[in-house]
Image 1 (cartoon, rainbow, N blue to C red):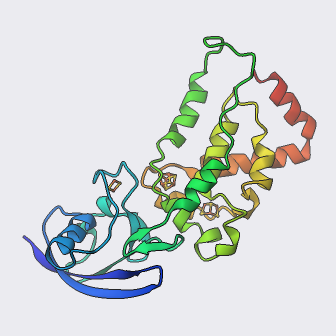
Image 2 (cartoon, protein in one colour):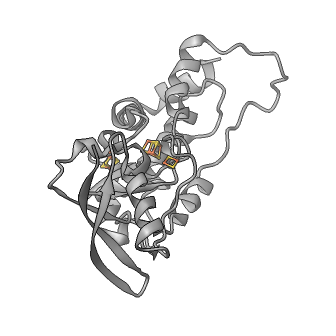
Image 3 (cartoon, rainbow, N blue to C red):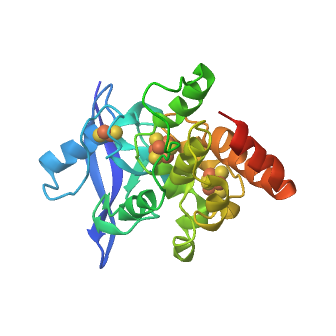
Length: 248
Ligand code: SF4
Ligand code: F3S
Ligand code: FES
């Protein structure tokens, strides 16, 4: 059975805005994005929201529901009480374009700062077989849909605009870790993680892992191993060099 749900949605643009109250019909099995679409269709035709797949796979519909970073298309209305007021706001860590749509170009800039995979120059196609364990390790990180919810939730940048220059955020530190763990990558990722991508600013709060819709163990499987490799390197740089030279 449907019911009339109470919603508070942020409306505005870069110059400012405010929460607006709406009463919208909610039906069984719906997600927050369904309600936002009904709101657009019936009461607020100019409400801006970004979405594409409605299946939790494109990473477009990221926003905050009751202050928590979430995919609008994967947040079921059944998790809220029928008399609860559900707030929907844009991601807080990024500049608003309009209503629920934010400018996520910070993330694209950070992506460009991670140098591409660099295999040994003399390696010919077919000369190397990946061990299954190495394939599986990076496969987890490859599930990332680039929703940037982890970037939005990390306290290092969420309320600290000034940290954005020095910190790449969990999604891109994870990319650095993925490449560092690749047996054929020859770039020096570990020192760059510290000096270029701000690994030291992460204090392992794990909020990024908690909000990841792909359930990637960002902190345990990417950030902590990267920190350990950095600590090992500092403890004994020759061991690192040896590992690098003899790991093939
Ligand atoms: Fe989204 Fe998870 Fe990828 Fe972060 S790591 S961008 S939360 S899918
Ligand atoms: Fe931020 Fe995740 Fe580290 S939330 S502080 S990147 S563990
Ligand atoms: Fe694609 Fe939500 S619309 S992840």
